[in-house]
Amino acid sequence: MSETSTVDEYIADFPEAVQQILRQVRATIRAALPDCTETISYQIPTMQVGTHPVMYFAGWKKHISMYPVPEGDAAYEQAIAPYRSGRGTLKFALDKPIPYDLIGRTATLLTERSARH
Image (cartoon, rainbow, N blue to C red; front, top):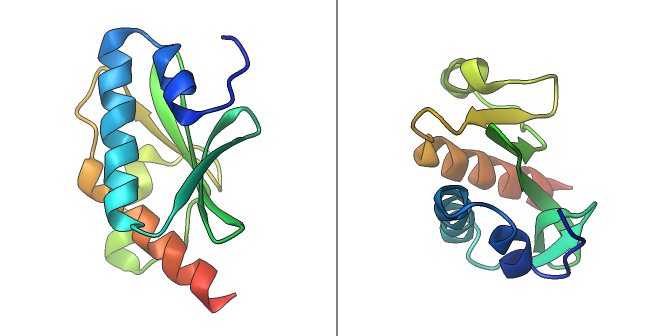
């Protein structure tokens, strides 16, 4: 993949089916974080609130990843358990339904955490 400077360019580097998923992930995060701005950091899409990065997402060959993973209540922890990949990453396989509601919930929790710090 080539180095990109915008989220649109980043998404355009993927096959059309993955582009659709990445666009929906982006829309889901933006709905949960209406005041966020977008940038590319670490060569992946980064959602910021003010000047603070809140959430990153990335497309890969077989999955979509999101970083970081916030702490949540027991129900949230149970919901993310199948997608956890290490302490700070959620991975969503491209060959399975993407849990957009969980992505939105994760973005909301990250925003709440960011507001406290």
